[in-house]
Length: 236
Image 1 (cartoon, rainbow, N blue to C red):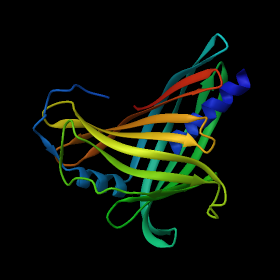
Image 2 (cartoon, rainbow, N blue to C red):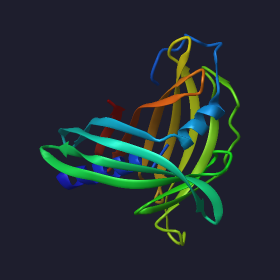
Image 3 (tube, rainbow, N blue to C red):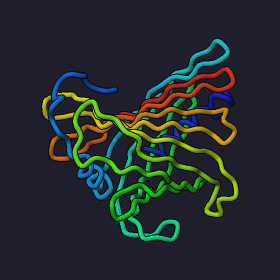
Image 4 (cartoon, rainbow, N blue to C red):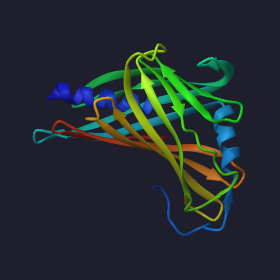
């Protein structure tokens, strides 16, 4: 059982590192938020964020708490991806998690790629080469309550694209918090190539009317072979 727990925990944490409703519902429903400006800021800005990790995992009648902390550092440079020019956003995550008294260090470097219009092209890390497609144009401005499809992604073991490992579908929504702020919620549904493991994930940023965005938290859950897990990464 503990081996299954470790596998599920590692799978979920790594899905966090390789990816992309808080607040109330009524306030600020007529306020417009510049979604395209917010995306441009996310792509270009450098950030250094301390985070906490909380959650739980259950199976065979046992439940274990998950805890931990870490740091996410991001910066952007010019590069190429899949044969075309791109903006490369480097995300370096360090920290540790503890499950049932066992602590494991976390170290990950993931590279996210965007075109000149800040549309996602894909991402890579030590174990995945992921290509985004079916990218939809996002609104210049958006109001609370709006949702939309964004893009899909196929992941492979490496750039040869010989072995497909997973796919995902990404959508967005805006949820009002105050008259001048809202939650930008990015929903991602990951499915492995066998179709047996699905990891719904929610990535939430606070957004204001100037297009400034600040990471708030990310949540994911997984049910597999009699075990279930929930995990949240929150900005400190």
